Image (tube, rainbow, N blue to C red):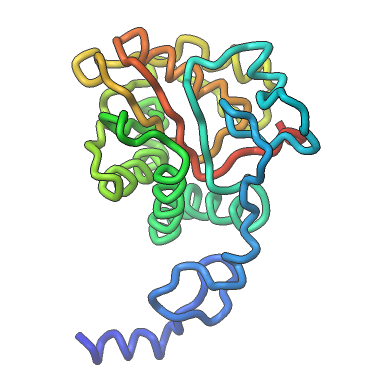
Length: 240
């Protein structure tokens, strides 16, 4: 086994999964890329977690949360959706770089421990894909993040607790209002998995919050008491 590993490293030298620079085999991302990761900085919206640049008054919630209150209690992410964080998520989602997915999940679990009331959480639930989209894409990235996060936090993962009941267009190029209309009433939850429980909802990126809001509504209609949202990255306010 040692000889096989040595031969593999000789033929395919270990490299950073982001910049391809030589890196120890045990590291998924090199130290240089880790230092370049754009962390979510304070001050931030107390509910959705978006950065509030220059907000030094008593209001610690963003305009979007004030105008349209969210169904989830709290959303947090370790990074802004920019630079190496954006690259890591895109490579994980679209190129199936599983080691990057596990690395993202580790960072998300650390943020959950630091920023969320985990003592209340009963189960981890990924944002679901429509069955056809899941089949065409070969899986669900949110579920691939949720499973290792649940193991790390010592919580059960319930990937079937929430379902997407209709096909929805991709949110990438939609405006905030279009995103909200696109996913309205697109989800349903199983009461047996969520009733009287606090749920940790997991996805890769939080942008407008429309998907997380609709998922939280479905979970609460099925009897969930609280919903906390955990994503790998948060889109900056000026890019929503």
